[in-house]
Length: 402
Image (tube, rainbow, N blue to C red; front, side, top):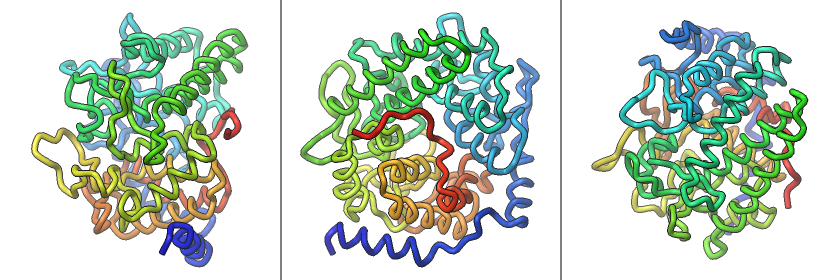
């Protein structure tokens, strides 16, 4: 079966099998609410309460973005979301660095992933609350973004660098992002996150009556988006890759990170088409039994278990809910609504089959990691709600597709 025929079959699945209600049932809402109560913790330094999905109480950087969306869907008040942002800003160092976890791991001073402005916009748009983002916090946001753009763009080529695979959040994708302090990779995912974060900051600046700052940071986002399109795209394979720091060559590792330009609205229409037909829907690449795995099936490192020397959680032959979520919204944005619905259906089926787990085996669908997990994986219950509602909670002021 060719890929176009496969897509047709997937479209049929999406229209005949998705029959869930427009919102989750009261019973499921009660179950999720009970789980989430375990995630309320207090930061000993600021005395602020926050939400985390981890039983060891750590507040992580990009986790809180997806956890904020869960809280919005669950009808939670804004307090823990706001505190998640301000706790990190309260811990900012004079040079702008914010360590990516609270409490901080002082051995590895890796800068927080760029999601704080996007979380702030979620609060602005869904709770209509802005007063908490004071002038001081605005300046701290600007300083944290400038740290990414200056200190973590060592060769000043416009593309920022991950310091390690754990820094990327995809803990053991060492092939593309290295080990501690390697500073190996100008990550395609990182730079896409930064494009969205820069645009979010520009939107915040506009709403706070700072048009000059807004223009400056929107131009920075546009320049970075163009660099991603031109420098991180491989025409031969039809995919986006990281670039090796200071070496001006692509790192040919097919990771779920390569789909980030869809979520950020950066890829051209033709690039999107190639990625979807040549990579996503290809059973030899990313279309696993329970899509979408963190590495392509063709990768030597594709393994359902961690390999010797691996750090942290497993981002190999494993499916993670937040990356599925970003891809899902990217597909919708580029007009592939039927395929997005298939991703929504498969993700819902995965969490229904294996429960609320940290991540999942992309071949068997078995749940892995923390059990139960009340963090970002709970988002899996809301894909189909967002799909039927035709709602994109992640979208704001994106440029049109080229």
